[in-house]
Image (cartoon, rainbow, N blue to C red; front, side, top):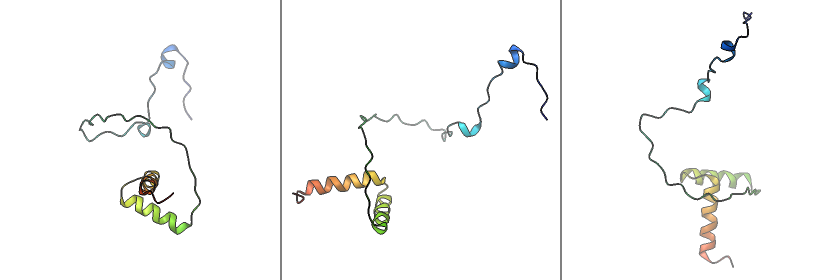
Length: 87
C-alpha cells in the first residue's frame, strides 16, 4: 500500500510527469520543410451504399494511387464532369 503523504504547499506544487505515450513522435533529426498552407475547404460527410466487391475495388484503386478513398472518388467525379457526356 502507498505511504500517506502530508499535503504541504511543496507537495501540491510537484511537477506533473507526462507519459511518453502522450508525447508526439520524435523526428529523425531533420527539420521539416515548412509547407504552404492551403485554404481550408469546408467538407461534409457523404455516404453511399454500394456492393461489397465494388467497395473493395475502389479501396484497392485508391491505395494503388496512394490516395484516400475520398480523394479518389472526388477525382473520379471531376473526371466524369469534365467528360461532358453526363448531360
